[in-house]
Amino acid sequence: MRGYAVIVAILGAGKMGELVLGGLLRGGHPVTDAIATARRPERAEQLRAAHGVRVFNNATAAGQADVLVIGVKPQDADALLREIAPNMRRGALVVSLCAGLPTEFFARRLPEGTPVVRVMTNTPALVGGAISAISPGAHATEAHVARAEELFRPLGAVIRVPEKQQDAVTAVSGSGPAYIYLFVESMIEAGVLLGLPRATAHELAVQTALGSATMLRDSGEHPAVLRAAVTSPAGTTAAALHQLERHGMRAAVLDALEAARDRAVALAAQNT
Image (cartoon, rainbow, N blue to C red):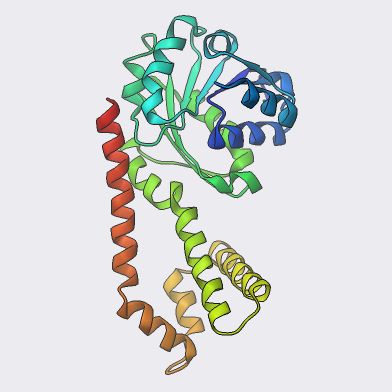
């Protein structure tokens, strides 16, 4: 990593862990700076073949790494932490990708004073388009947070949030890509129903989503302003939006995000 030499271990290199690993390598870090762990031998071989990294068991990786990225499912985190705690390097930084689990969960299971940073990122990391929200735990200094930011910057944008907001972040951006995909999928199916070839409907819907998101990001305008610019009085867009409102789209989105937030809270309650 720029400015200092560290070894980063991805513990539990599943979908999200592998995305972080890929971001590390895209960021120009030597492959010897990144190691990984995997439960199954075939998964270990996949990681070696795809990324050229060394793959170890959890205890061995913990003993080598300066930064430990915890990418296991929340229900597996307790066992993992108890496994690695005796082997960790003094002062190693722990970065959690575990949805719903507070930094205090890790602090209770790791050596006294271990710095922990909680991160919620999302799957557009695969194309460098993620948004990663970072929250420091009690023992994490500004230097630790800065190191976490550098780790996730190759994946996309990085922001800092208070840890109490992380469950809401999970609902909005952690799960958010699935909402966008569902809406675009629905547009494609509607286009087919209206007589468009599937390939044409797909291209129209995907490019519309991409272009609209780019305008949102680059214009600095509120979504309502951009929406109004497309909506002529008594026009086609107004007719479509009327139906979305009639079917309670805003309420459905609110209910969906509340459900995701509540599930994150429940995961924490189940595993603490």
